Length: 574
Image (spheres, helix red, strand yellow):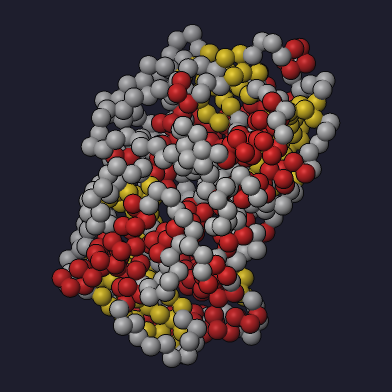
């Protein structure tokens, strides 16, 4: 992994590296940028002016557990009644508008779930545990002070023998909502090891506010001897704010914690604060280095919007469809896109209907075959036995969809890219990332398949259609806007250096065969149509600052409707 080097012409005088040890090392489903993490850890670093402002704050809440944490602070540390706490944290202030009605509804429910199984034998701790390392002179990183903190809510027994860190999560603790970190063996989880080390050996501190973040944490002296004593037992417990379930993920004595940290936490933490690898993606949204990042491609005018004053955000065709709905259907709903962007949970798994699961499984099966036998064309008999349920990746197809899905996979053999002798490389689900500097938006495009045909890359979208004889699309770019974005990206260096023979393809798999549509991205009319489609999906979203709900028949299928409260004038009243 490349070593971290500071951004060109940056200055860093605080010499303070501060990390929230557990969350800093916790795997992210969207992929975290190692360089950004190391940059963010260096508090007070100043970047040279770039072509765009380094950061433009969005006054709206961007963290789905943010208001919950503020409410719990009032309840646990200031003895405020829960209803009054909710009223305060959801109301408008000088710095922010009132909370979205959907976020307010979720916060009210999350607070109830968090409090309903509270353990009275432990007391909330009104300060942070911080593990401080001071050096006599700057080390090789230029740091003279290290602060390891933990994200979560601290509790302790009255005698100080037990410390517990409770980590609220906006999901269930079992089933498909489990996070990527849980796929790692429990004993090897670096995030748990690093967090437990802070809980076991950290001392009471007050962290500075965000306006003075480069200041050192201040020791808390007036909390008594019990708070200062080292615990005999350390616990980390996850609390689902969706259903109230609690799960103890670690319970150890300080000696075992120290051994775990030395083996798994410290090596990963040391590597992470020195990481120099760039990974453009969702992390670019609030990264101050994004406008000048050498790894983030730039393509001004991609969205057809000339407006740089809005906060920098990510956007994909999925976001556009969430906001605007499908063509010729009155189902536009700004609140749907906003609540999905907040990643509010889907308690009934309404987003994963049987046909959606089948589609994901078809993609996963084809991907596994390509990766297991690169260069060999798929055959119809590579498909699973559709007489029983089958699985691919993390998807299990229900029995009533098994045969249909198997026939779709068999149909792919007709247009498998490896059937062409000129194809030398194939990549599944690569995420293309580009910064539209005219709109100051980071655009993400998750490709189904990219394959190298000769010296040019071909951008293919694969869709499934359960209809026996689906009619051909009359306006393929409008009906499949992923293809419109593909047209604009496929002729740019974002995909590859040689675009002379670039093309875009739509492969439709059905129960009776497959259809392949080839689109010429250099055709002037096609490019003009693609620009209109992309702009129509992005322009209203980009200008919107309120994300008001638009109720309608589409609410019946929307997984966010469980939280959405379009008719409530005051989100603090449930």
